[in-house]
Length: 419
Length: 213
Image 1: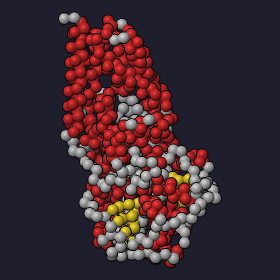
Image 2: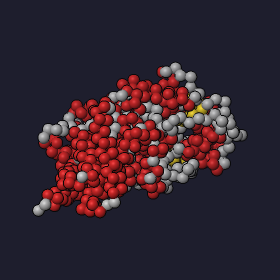
Image 3: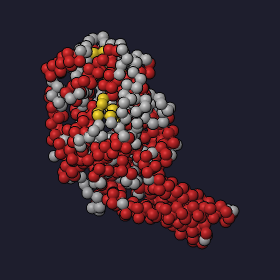
Image 4: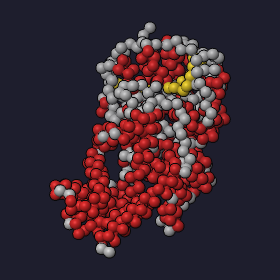
């Protein structure tokens, strides 16, 4: 355990942006009620303001007179090994970094990124939960946390191409767009690959897959390790550079989108002239510009709702596109959950939580809020644009024995394409 | 020297300490490195900031304020009272020149504000979540700010209280840099960054129905 490394990291991470956020907090407790883990369990340790306590303590004790005084008088405690271990459980198992807390904070404090900074410190101290670290190590060694090696990737793609009779262009130099799937799609939802391929062909997109950049998931980002986050993102950017594409399309993966779209430029040299976008943005654009046409009312036979993903909608801004699509596909049966859009309730499986076995009980407990929302909307189908959310939904639908269909938005679009 | 003059000087010294303390604290923060967001913009940061400081604070815009409208209203009212008490402080040498209706309106608002502020102590003690999160500073800040608005109210009704109002002002102002009351400065920073960040990403403040990209 390298607690001092964690403290040094907290101090390094505390630039003027972080410091001003920490100084603005009035401990009003509003963030607690925004947290699905707090709402589900009532445990005050799950309040987002408490999750950033170590960062705040390190900042105050290092930079402020009151913090130094409190430490000298024994009112405040220095950060010990047991604190790092204790907070490791709280911030990895009971936080999806969904950032809903920042939406309700009267001050507008961005708690999600601050909790991510706490993860960075704890990761440097070597106190990441074992399950999550195993997935990180697997991705570093094999290229994928779910074992999508070169051979597995080739086999899966060949199988998808045969099974759904779609062409999957591979390592095509001169293509405009590189499409990168997540291993969740490759291993658990292969129909998504076929669906997206069908849409891209229909839209006349000049696209390709890449063996080198075959995995968009970034477990280094979940862990909070800047070094590993960069290495994993570098694989995708290197592939894009080699192929000479102009655009990288992140498929249905929220965290990967957040990393490549918003974080990469702030932590590494991103190749110039390559735009990163999300599949839902591309779908929205295709529909808006008429590059694809959808069957009006194709899903009008039962109430359907949309689950906003934290990293794609709340933090990614792609709030309107899925709604425009669903208003075509299900003009009479589309119902919003409450709250929705940027105030949506997280599914509880993101941020690496679903990879940690010990987090299962609170992950399921948090999902009960979603069940309540779905029931109130009277929905029989829940559409979404993130495969990590989808994995959580599929698992929880089975766990709670729910009569709800879980659908990927791309799949719905592909099935409703006009010939 | 009269008691009013002595206490006024005390208040001014306290205010001076408060301002210096805040400036010192701000300076040390501004000296920390600032990482600019280098990701390509998807929306307008300016619109995000405008939204954060205007509509974004409207009760109907946030689920949390719609649910906790009593807490929201309490917050708005006691903050109005604090600003009004600050105005009373500035106008204190000339209070006798104010028309009666202004004096009484201000007294009612500051008095109500003091009570609403004080209610924060009971809210913190009653709510188990808030009780755990609360630090001694939370209670001290409520006590001192409600005493400030309460004494502003008392001064308006009984001008002889003015020296006590000055003494309390001096103590509160000197305490600000060390307490959470300093959020009166950092609120603007956090809100600005919130608007800028989410505007940049095209999440808030964008034209209705517009795609983020």
